[in-house]
Length: 346
Picture 1 (cartoon, one colour):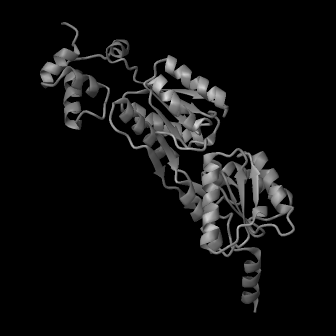
Picture 2 (cartoon, one colour):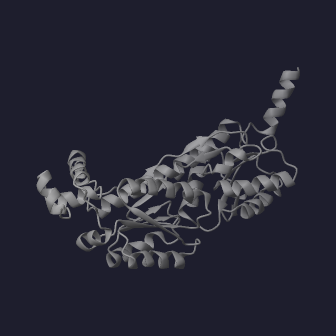
Picture 3 (tube, rainbow, N blue to C red):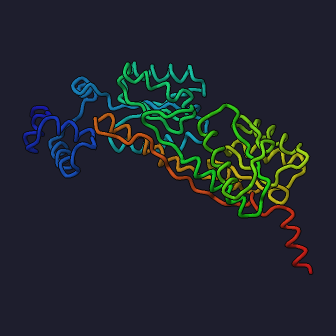
């Protein structure tokens, strides 16, 4: 019995060699019914795919590279999970590498992936962002960014709708009665910080509340930076009654510093984070935050990459809606709580 070839399958299915090749690697360019027929014939006849032979013919390796800041980053885990799910569904393998949040290392990792002939690359929390644009013509490999940190737009990206989500979070605090609301941001000038700050400003403006520069403090996106920024806010002659944090990691540091200073959350100060990391539901009190659909974002990035690899048009800038998750770290300001107690006692 001779080895079954793509030519044999194409003849049996009455389709072209190219269609069989695309169907066997789960290309979105092939109709679902045709792909099912091709795969059934291939299975019945015992066809075995040679990855090496296929890459020589198609000049593709059915692999994609994924760059994360660090594999210990809680945000990256679920994003990569979504990428892998989609990749496996389409017969692709995923290579993972760390950038350590260093722009130079990020570029080196991307070039390393190119040398290993991956078919496409996904970069999470990119530190170089739009700088990829002049590189694309040289590399000829599609690249999709998730939550680009670099100011400016990249050709293909998936991002949380930062402005809208932040505006909703601050409106939540305003709705509770807070008027002196601080923003605890990130000092590195990332695009996500710029957009979340814009949402904060817009919410204040819509509520006719003045923007006060003294109520803006910057950390570094990590608990240590969040703690120091919160310390500065607490040192004000009139501290805020609520704080909206750039991310959950900053909020964790802020929460720790408040506890050390003897402030009770939310009785003395309300706190809101951004990301809804796993730990947010286990803080004391549990953290009100904006949930990013991380797994969905990973799938969307991979779907975009597959379209680009297949030569199909793909959406440029995809914005995904966040979801405000209200827990126990937010409540009306202390004066309103005390007023309610007086009214109840009388």
